[in-house]
Length: 138
Image (cartoon, rainbow, N blue to C red):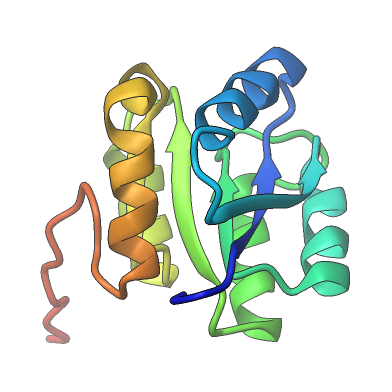
């Protein structure tokens, strides 16, 4: 992303949380929240319209859950990087999201400490907050 701003789509149904994330990202001139969505259907539509570099995606969304959103977005725009940002336990949803192509996971409780580092890591092409284990087909 040298010389340009990373365009971000912020997806969460809780407006105060989106405001908090906006305030965290405002610390950085190289990050631009290009669009926001408050439900899964809106997220897919905004991703189609804006083709962001990165999506910060909540899993627990109304209308279409984050896992379905992730799958649809990566089908239409495989180069888009996605970080799952959620308060839900990471177990099943997180593993499914990573299997489908998310590159990071940040619990909302760790966002103040980890979100900017996660963004830098994922935009740099590496995974954040997860260990990748290849599924062996039997």
